[in-house]
Length: 218
Ligand SMILES: [Cu+2]
Image 1 (tube, rainbow, N blue to C red):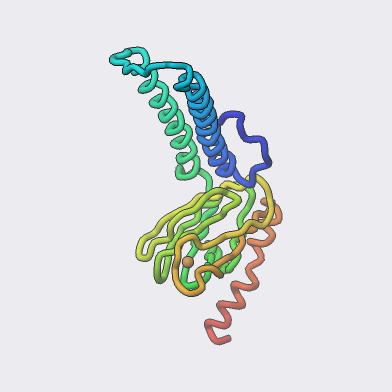
Image 2 (image 1 turned 30 degrees about the vertical axis):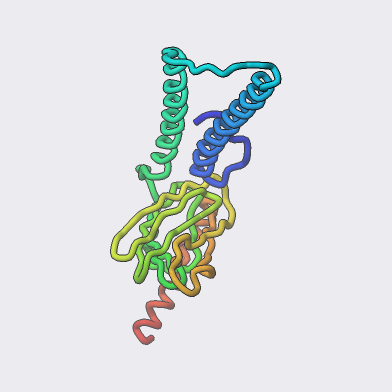
């Protein structure tokens, strides 16, 4: 988007969220320095020992245009970058791998289209993953700090989250909505695998047939 980010982001969303964050913090710091320097300068310049008599100034059109115009432009650029980042987080890409995530007090369950069920989320590096979020009891929230994404999992309603990893690895998943006694222990991991490794893992459905056999009483 623009060139403020210098790290090694874990996902595409990490990059856009950090860029917006750095942009807003940078503007805030510059304004803080500007206001502080001006204030200290005036404290010395108009010290009463120098005999300055304060006078009110009325109606300076240029000053008024400046202090309305500059903050408006700054806030609009913050909104623009924030909105562009929001679209990266919320717009569903054409080609996605889909997983159903179910939250319950106090763990996560992931169901895959081929019948696999896990308590750790396995996803490919590519394509992005569309996670369908639902809860069987109270409200939870699916939060991957390294990806800078968090989405509420609302009881009785389906929500979604897109994961767009930029590199392989294991990343923490936390519940970010207080959901009762063991809320603080409601952690799991998202494991991002290369497409080859992921396909190997995904095509191994021996645990699925084992679970089906148990269900059928075989
Ligand atoms: Cu929870």
